[in-house]
Length: 255
Image 1: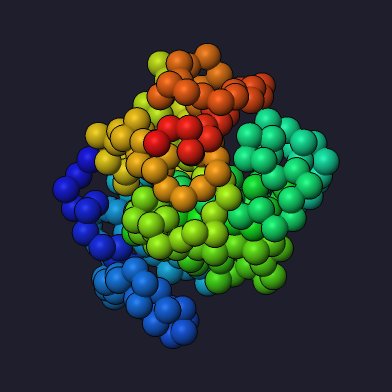
Image 2 (image 1 turned 90 degrees about the horizontal axis):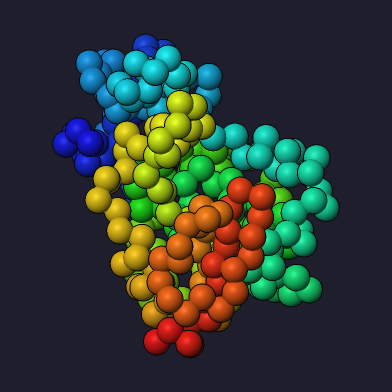
């Protein structure tokens, strides 16, 4: 991964374009960024265009991908079209949400926000953490553009393990690590190709899972490839879907 990815996000505003002042102030207070009036020669950087932030990376450009942005309103419309198909599925069961409207789930790796919205559609309250400043900036911009938040959702910037130390209101923790690319010809979906440009290659999900199991929550659920071995022993139950498996750990049994 290029060394310059580690710096704080860079936002390019073309001539005549300006970030909304309130959004810029709020974002700068949580996740500092730099502004430039000149288009950078190398990525990654954001372009403020069409009233939203769009992420550019050199690798994505070489792959012929358009700039990346998130659309939470579209996420929710798609979930509503599928309503009833997932609320009793393996992820909802693993998280223990059914029949518990006050259940609060901590999404430890927010990413594109799609899993947070899926969990919210089950009826849970969601707290989401994203520690990568580039991805967090995309999330905050998508949240800004969402007309109405359809479920209780709190978006936090920082490492999940550190954020969880200050919380005692979490019932379940959800962890979806980014796995190495499979040896197949088909390219992964667009946002995953961008994430691989931005996220460190030495991510160790076993270490993260161990730390999450020491946090205050009843359950910790990790998403795994369907036929992959468990990351850690003492899986309480494995909930299998069509393409993924959700391994559920009871926190008090692993300490």
